[in-house]
Length: 261
Image (tube, rainbow, N blue to C red; front, side, top):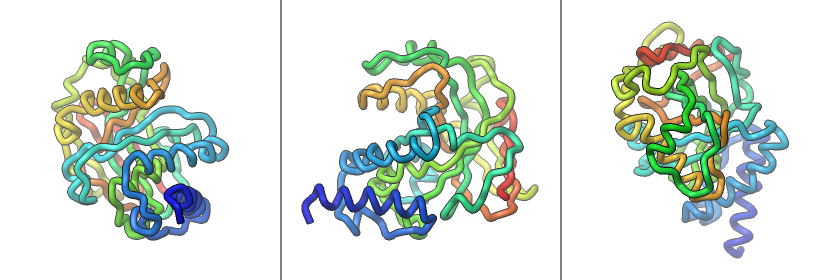
C-alpha cells in the first residue's frame, strides 16, 4: 500500500471504530502513520464526518498538557482537537455512557472567547484581551485505540481523543481569581479519585490556552468569539463506569458535575 492508501485506510478505520464503538489496534503501527502531519490530516478528514453527526464546531481543546498525563501515555508534547455542538453538556447533565468505548474524565479550566482572533498568531496580550471568562469543566476523553495504547500520532489522528465536555454554570471573568493557584479535586461516586493543581497544566492554564490559540492560527483556524477552549487536565485522567457520578471542584473557579447513565 502507498502512504496515501495507508492514510485513507487509517482514516476509515478510526471513523468506523468510533461509529461501532469497537476499539482497534494503533493506527501508528497497523497503517504506518508516523508523523503528526499525517495524523492531523487524518483527523481533519474525519472532522467533516463529525460535523455531520455532531453539528457545528463549538471550540477547540489542547491535550497532553499535564506531565502526569504525558507519563501515563508515554507522550512528551501537547496536541489539539476540535469540539462540536453534540459534545457539549452542562452541569448536572446525564451523559450517555454507551456512546463511548473506554471513557476517562479530566478536570480542566475552560476559556470562552470574547472576540475573533486574526489569522496570524496573536501576542500574549492580544490573546488575553480576547478572552471573555472562564468556567470549570470536565472533559470526557475516549480513544478508539485498544486499551489506550496510544502514541502521539494515534491520539492526534483520533481528534486528540476528544469525546464530550461538561461546563459549569457560573462564568468567572478572567483576572478576578488567580488561576495558577487553583487546586483541583475530582470525586467519583463521592470518593476523591484525583487531586491536582493548575500548575501542572503547562505551568498555567492560560499559557496552555495561548499555545492553542497560536497553534490554531498557524493552522489557519484562528479562534472565534464564543468558542470554548479546553486548556488541559489539572491532574491524571481517570476511567469511569456506567452509573458513576463525577464531581470536580476547581478552587475559587467553582464546581461542575455529571452522571454517566
